[in-house]
Image (cartoon, rainbow, N blue to C red; front, side):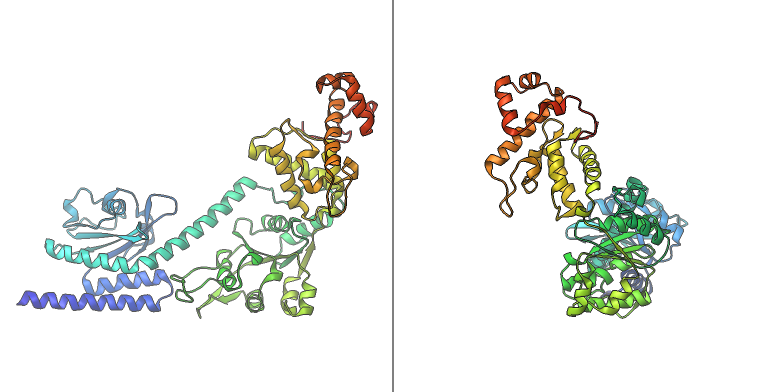
Length: 528
């Protein structure tokens, strides 16, 4: 009879604890605070002690303590377990709950934190499983008890872990995102070094010199920068040059393309959201402003954000504070804003699509990047740079760019700017079969030039005959260059007769003597 009443009291207590935990989950938006509250409830009501929660570190098999009761920060740092290591590691590996009746008598209990004095105590450990994968463990100490009591406590602890799994998954995803961003920034710093310094941006033309000077002037300040220019001109490259030339270079550089995000997601992406803020918000999430705290936030295509987000963004620029979506807690950040746009913000103001007060907040230090068509002298510098880059990426050995290809690039209007040039060179490197980029290796959009005898027809492209003549002319010129204007040797190289070659030379308007004294800078780019 007494046993029945004790079990009834126990069942009521467990039900009450589960209710309190569910209430805490409904009202606690900070997941770490929630976990600490849950551990506190179990310690107070269930005589559990040393409640500990571990999480699998991203891309590893190491489980480290994320939340704990009664452990110092130093003891928490020590609490790391590999799969299969100790009781915690075995639970993480098997996905099955385990209990130790007395930790002083079990050789598998390793006491990694060093917080226990090896006094007799039972130890319970259960897996935290999310989407059929063990993402963490939950463990407690309790007084030595009978096997039946330990098994009942183990089942209850597993039930608590299952209830908390969604919230714990939220912590883990935030941890993965922070780790990924930190790793990416560290990788960029190690790999790029001074690559984003203004002195290392490719280009020497006069129209780029003011850009370099402005970058140097503003980098060491905290001023908001607005970078303007057509799509593909390298606005993000300039933004990175500002960041990596500033005192914030060791802090995060976070990019957000405002044009690529739907209107209903941009607020959550920038400011984060609280659990339950909208359908699918199963955990609290930090936004890009919080992730960039102490560093730089680059807002690309700022002209495409909605009026609602513009109001919130204006407040952040003014106060450096905001609230997450669905929350009322004010979050303070120290973030430098660099914005960029390819659209006409002044027209947006006139049309009512862009707030005038936000425009003046962003336009503190404007930098205009000229389009590639206004940087003709930089085209070959950029082309050679991209050839070297994609030689390494694709394992090719392109050594030079032919005269015909140079002519095509020189007269093309480059609507896609530097990005289009880079894409063209990558394609040419991939399609080159003889370590030379020929005109026929370039995209069809470039093969419409009078300079290369392709008889450009506006909006229609070149005729088939013109394209064939352009190809033949380039092959013949390359052969003449190789043999310094000697038509006989060129004919042998092309496996044809001198009579046929002379006919083609005359038909295509080629002058062999122009190639008898070929120098390095004679109408071709050499990468040798």
